[in-house]
Length: 296
Image (cartoon, rainbow, N blue to C red; front, side, top):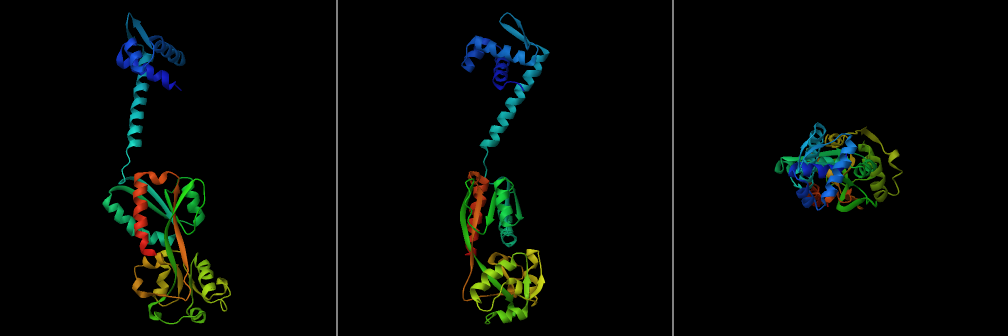
């Protein structure tokens, strides 16, 4: 690999065409310029110039090296332009979050993209630990998780408090619901549903609830957008974060039962340290924070 300093001196010499003026321009002595030239020629293995008094011409090897020097300068200018260009409405952003939050968030993302045609945003539904790992390794710019993260390479800000909702068919709206009635109806289970049931039911039915594994399951669904469908059809109940309920297109066919003891999850937005200072990431982060106030 060619020495970058020697190559820069040689390229400047070729552009200026004079040893003394090159030395003045680079803040060097004329012998210093000659020394860089000789070292670069030694590295290449062939002479780079042919002197004729105070002037010089390039050898074929010199022409080839000059082409590299000018190309490298162009690449450095383009790199600097890229570094200095920090437009909040241009570039790629990736987000990782739970399935229910992704379903709720996506319409807000689309609204942001309408206002920024050159912004490319990817949203991936993923488990909690996968989100943390992907933010750490740079796969996600932003992650939304349901618990605070204390990691030296991550920034975390509290986003919102999201209610964990007991969701039943609309026909049961306003009724007193106990665990016996729920078991008659049947649980619409999903991958996070059992943990949600343990969390919510242990608070509200401490005498009767024996664990999520003892619930009567009516059906199991692992696609977040389909979980509320059997509930809307009157085929069971489920437990979802508020974002999953709000994002359902047939929300009017559902009812949320207010149990005596509510359970909330604190949502946190995480990013690698310094990443949120990039304009497009900061702008989207602010948009998500503004939208998430509706979940509280």
